[in-house]
Amino acid sequence: MLRIMKILLAASVALWGLLGAVGNLANWNATTGAVAAVTSMSTFPGGPERWQATTNPAIILAGALFILLAKIATGLLCAGGSWRMWTARRADEAAFAQSKTLALAGCAVAIFMLFVGFAIIGEGWFEFWRSTELRETAGAPAFRYSGTIALIALLIASSDD
Image (cartoon, rainbow, N blue to C red; front, side, top):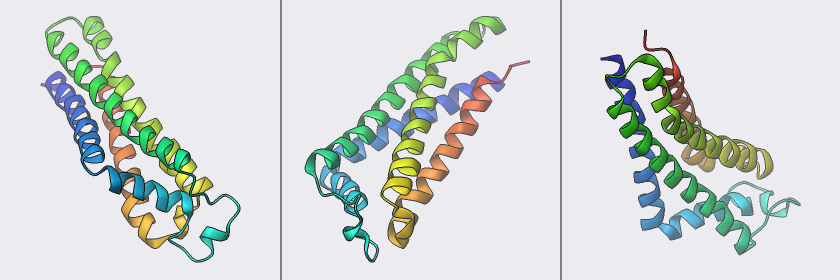
């Protein structure tokens, strides 16, 4: 039963990544608009005058693509990992442990994107923690997602015995 739950959790991270990517693509203007709000620092007083604020379209596009591509990679890696785990669910512990690699890599990509993109770049560099709006709409969910995905990764990585 524990192996089945690990497979389902890996699949849920795949679903998070793929649905998130579809949402980002379907609402591309909102995706780039959110990145632009962060990079321009326009959602808090004095932000646009700070030296690191930018409206450079290349930086905005790079940020949006970073998010999109990381979600796609997360989804594909975790989906592939879920499938490998499913096919190895009745195998010995070593074989099942080996089957977890892609799912764990997918979780790591998601955590990396959320931590680097939102905590380091968004909050650290572009100071979106100063913005009540962005703190609630971007920072809080990113923290929830990264924490949840990290816990899922720890559970998947744990021994089955």
